[in-house]
Image (cartoon, rainbow, N blue to C red; front, top):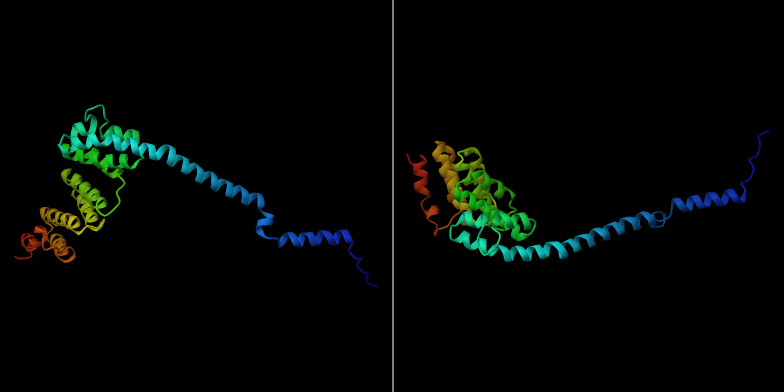
Length: 232
């Protein structure tokens, strides 16, 4: 004769009901400590960033802007060494501004100026260093950054990298006149290397993708094509 199962005690039944209720409880109720910990962590991150921005970034930017103008004056006079190191009046040159305020927007601009100074002075390795470190954005600066890096590598006779940077300059930013200038340089460097087919393609793209009747580079594209061998 089969044994009958004994009825569950009231205590056991209550435990099972509690277990079922716990398994089906909302996530918030069962994980309050975890959620509060995560929310608190996010709040701390936000407050930390706000404090860094207000107490560090904004004051640095103000100080950097006040310091950079004298170096810019020397830069505009083509006094590149002075602009880099000692613009006068007790002010920092671009290198000092980078050291002190490199994380600010003005410090970032100083990297661009330093790169151009070194390029003008013939120190192409330092020019590359600072231009690569420069964070370019907007419609013009990505074109300028890539184009100037192309100039640096062209001066170093590393023509493969120069061609890559000129091509990047023509595709970066949003300014057809400036992009066309570097597209022309791309074609001219291909021509200089004797790669007439690539030069022709570069000049054809200049004519096709950057039409500008006021630009001598665009108007004279047939001359470039002829020199590259298309008219022979």
